[in-house]
Image (cartoon, rainbow, N blue to C red; front, side):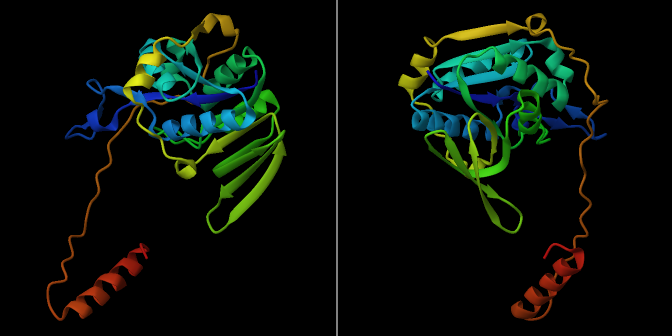
Length: 255
């Protein structure tokens, strides 16, 4: 059976992240979740698999904490999941992440399409899909807002800054999808119960036979403090105040 692999990332829930007074970032109490954008990618992969007459397969690369993501991912429609369990994922950059995912994809039979989000909700580095494509030597389409599949041909609509672009490629391929490609429905009780019975394959880091040394290392995080000018337009007629506000925004480059 043909397979559509969707890659997703287990990230810290930004609602639980705390910025301290000295702007240091505290994620010690942050719970994990599937990246918001990856939820849309999972649904897009499920729909693409249906168009191909195949099945969607979820794939993640993470530490032991990522294991708790599997049931959530499977409840969203994929029929099976692969989990690369590697503590090296905690410091992995885009190059290492893509290498691990691409190596795992090669172990999965009959993969016709790989779907990724345009970027993860924690870093939004936008490197994973292009790097996976390079590792697999498959064509890559990024910034995809719509997918149509007919036979072995995939047609994608790319949303660029000032236009839309239509691209056609022959499968197999890698696509990076934007959140607007489809809604990410909340799984129902029946889907959640069924997820616990779906097959999961765990791959240990040593089984991949790759170098996990990152090319870029993150030394730390610092919160951002916005210094507002606090300009108040309080005098004159309402229409005049609106004009003053618009002029100030244009001066700042906002409009």
